Length: 168
Image (cartoon, rainbow, N blue to C red; front, side, top):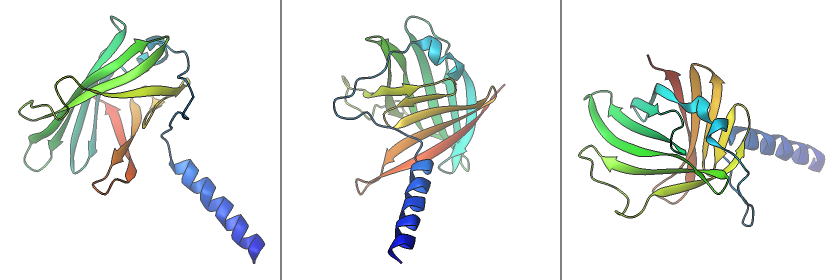
């Protein structure tokens, strides 16, 4: 019985790990070397659905040591903007940072005036870019997934998948 329990625990652990697409740096771990050349495949106009609405995300190609983006969530029933995000990926100390801010549909910032959310690079490979709590996954040239750790009202975190298709 103990052996069966151990095997089930191991299998369930692997399933939980396999479902977790976001990563975190350990306490004393530094971000790896990377440049915008490694992530330029993110550039483009992407559209998907999430939170009962339409998500629209536009990424610029690398220029000026950064790639900027705009995101909006549109309520599908009322065709009104729920909120915006503005930010980018920037080169910093031979690595990359993801930085952004949230705004209401009236462009009133959620974060303080002099603050932005910043996420350090954890890992990058040919089809994935892992920032702390954010993962960009290239499915093919016309489809990407973005996985985001979102904090719930009770303080716990849940991982949300955004599936995007290239919009033309």
